[in-house]
Structure formats: structure tokens, C-alpha cells
Amino acid sequence: MAKRLKTPLSESDARSLKAGETVYLDGIVYTGRDEVHIHALDYAEKGKKVPVDFKGSALFHCGPIMRKVGEKWEVVAAGPTTSSRMNSLEPQFIEKFRPGAIIGKGGMSQPTVDAMKKFGCVYLAITGGAAVLAAKGVKDVKGVEWYELGMPEAIWIMEADNFGPLTVAIDAHGNNLFADVGVKVKENEVKVRQKLGLKS
Amino acid sequence: MVDEKGVQNAVVELLRRTVVRLPKDVESAILKAYANETDEVPKMQLKAIVDNIELAKKTTTPMCQDTGVTIFYVSLPRDCRVDVEKGIVEGVRRATKEVPLRPNAVHPITRKNPGDNVGDRMPYINWKVWDKDHIEITVMTKGAGSENMSQLAMLTPSAGVKGIKEFALSTVLRAGSNPCPPTIIGLGIGGSADISMKLAKEALLRPIDQRHKDPEIAKLETELLEAMNMLGIGPMGLGGKTTMLGLNIEYAYCHTASLPVAINVQCWAGRRGTVRIHKDGKLEFPTHEG
Image 1 (cartoon, each protein chain N blue to C red):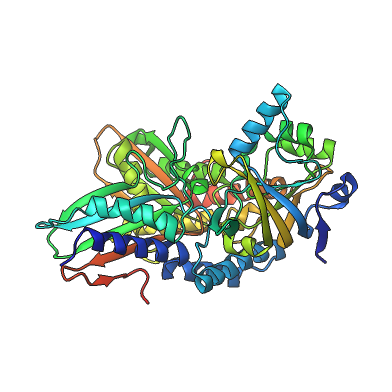
Image 2: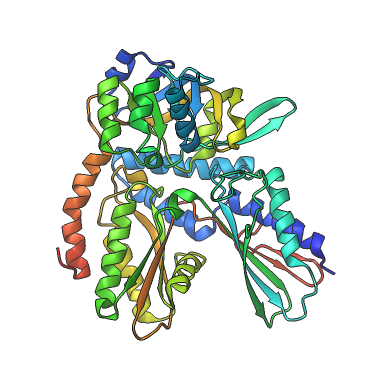
């Protein structure tokens, strides 16, 4: 059974999710990737206030295609970007800004898994490249911050409506589907090496 | 007679078709993978991909928000008097607004984004002159998630085919879930450091259901593809039967003292498109008819 949750997420919302579950989200979702992480952490270090409140939020690793119709922005395509690029920044980001969920693709490394466990945050995997499907789950664009970073790098404030399906790939208890797959791949590698006539 | 404006219009239409619809060979490989998958998690990933492909077609929307940087391959008739370069550059500028494409091209150091996908050496154009009468323009709109996983190895000749296989395996393992699997791999062998990288990308221009004309290379393509699909990385790296949709190799003769090998990784959304511009201005889209 798929779960449906509304943002902002409380710590107990986040901790109630288990790796492997399917989730749909309603409420505000912020996009944020490389530059948002760099800038937000820089602001935090300088004691400056960031333009949105990330607490309990769903932070979407996404650089969408947006279109302005009259005065209003609309989403054209909004699939996830590769989350591992944010590996070195995410643990600090989670500690400073306390998002409830990170949405992305490809998973993240152990320090982020640890930070998610410590602060109560989950990683929700959305299918990479399925950008029109993802955009269907956004019913409104509430605004944009840091637009000067460029369309892919800005913070887009999106209102989600049944956004998903999302797979809980890393939960707030240290479980990580990508790591589980990694263990199996390591086992399979032995057979692959045999087939290719390579040393194990 | 075709002129610069005609090239521009052809490029806008080419980009629109390329980012909205997959070439037939890639789409059927995805459908086959979907039918073949039995576990729930990979099945859901492939279902999202299949649904997304249909939705993109139906709404004429780019299937992925990462519409890449635009890499062109152009073949010109010997007597071509049209400013094709200008037509392509202006075509990219217009397509960015009209399709729309995501403005991806930035200055590599300042990261400043001009907003129109045009900058120094971008769009990047590979030129060739040929004996045919028409202009042919092929474009790849490849996202960064997969491009970032590409690798070059300068092997020693003694490493041989085993060395090539080892490098391919380690690159696919290292890429893991990152490049939006199921992927397509372009393997460039020989030439020189730069030529092998170029060949790796050009290998992705060949339909994935066509094997290399050299039977030994064709055999290596099949062997490597079958082996990689035993890894179980699966769609989006969440496990499953299909890690790779296709694997194409291109080679060039190289120095007797070297064995350059390059890998270009392509996500499932293997977008490539070709337009033929005939002398009378008639357009043909062999990869995207209708």
C-alpha cells in the first residue's frame, strides 16, 4: 500500500517510513541542487537568512525546465538530477536546515545516510528521466528564489499534488536500498568476471 | 533553394523531435526490458519510464528536463554555400525558447548561464564534407548525469582485450546507479586519447539493434552486453534484470605502443536525431518520421 504524506514532514513522519515503501507527497516541495547547497551553507556560515524555510521540507534534487506564461511560471519537465553530486554537502545541509525528505535519483553515500538517521530525514527515489510524469504531480508554482543562479540551479517553490510514485530508498533508521543492491552486485561480479575470462 | 533560415528552421524542428521522442531502437529495447522485468521495484521504475515516454509524445514535451548540451555532427555537400554554422547556432537559441530546452550551457569557471545554450564552442559542431547532394545534421542531446560517468584509459598494448573488458566492467560498476540505468554504452577503442573519446560518443549514434560490421567486434559487443546485464544493478540502480539496453563499439587504428579505450555512458533516454536538408529545401527526419 502506498502512503500519502503532506509536507512539511514532522520528524515522526520521516521516522515512520521504511525502506522499500512507496510514497506520494502533497504540499510544498523545494528544488535545490549543487548551487543551492553551496549557497545555503555559505549563508549559514555567515549567519545570513536563506529565503525559504527548509525545516521538514521535501528538498528535490532537480533542475527543471520552467516556462513563464504571462506573469506566472509553470513546470514543463521536472525529473531528478544525480544526487551523488551533493554527497559532500548533504550531511551538513541536513544538520543545518533539517529537511524531512530528500527526493532524487541514484542514492547518496554513507555520511548522508548517517545524517538522515541522526536528524530524521528520508531519501525518496524518483525515476530519473521521467520528467513529464514528475511534472504532472506539481499543481502550482508558488515562486522562485535565487533565480540569478540560472534556471536549473534556482530554488523553485512547487506545490505538489500526489507527487510520485516515490520509493523510500534510504530511511531514517540507516536502511539503504542502494547499498543492498550494491552487496548483490558484488556477488554477481564473480559470475560476470568468469564469463568475461577476467581474474576475480 | 535552402538558405541559413531554412537550416535554422530545420534545427529547431530536429531538436523538438529529438528531445520529445526516442529513436525506435531505444524505445523497443525499453519496452522489452519492461516486459522482461518481474520484481516489483524495477518494474515500477520501468513503468514510470514507459508512461513518461508516452506522456512526452502526447504533450510534445521534452521527456527529460536535462535536454543536454547540443553536440552536432554535420555532413556538407562539396558545393555548399549556406552558412550552416550560423543556422545551427540560431536554431539552438530559438529551440531553447520555443521547444523549450533547459538552458544548460554555462561558463566552465564562473558558471554564469547566458540562458540560451550558446557560448564559446557551444553548440559544438563536428564537420565532414561528403559527395552527396544534401546537408545532413545529426544531434545528440545528452544529459550530464550519464556524461559525468564517462572515462578514458590509456592501456598498454599488452593489456589487450582483457584490459578493455576490465576497464568496461570497472566503469559500469563505478557508474552504478548514477547515470540513469538501464544505460547504453559507447566504447571507443584506439586512435589516440582524444580520438577514442570521440569514437565512444559516435558509437552511441548507431542504433543499438545494429551490430558492428566487423564480426569480432560484434561478438565483443554482445559478450560485454550480456555480461553487464548479469550484474543486477537494474533500472535506476534499484536492482533488476536490465542494467544496459545496448553496447556499441567503434575503433580506429592506433599507435603500436598504445591502446586508448574510452567509454561514453548514455542514460536510458538515448536521444539522437537526424535531419536531411535537400537542395530544394525539403526536409527528411530518418530517425523521427511523421
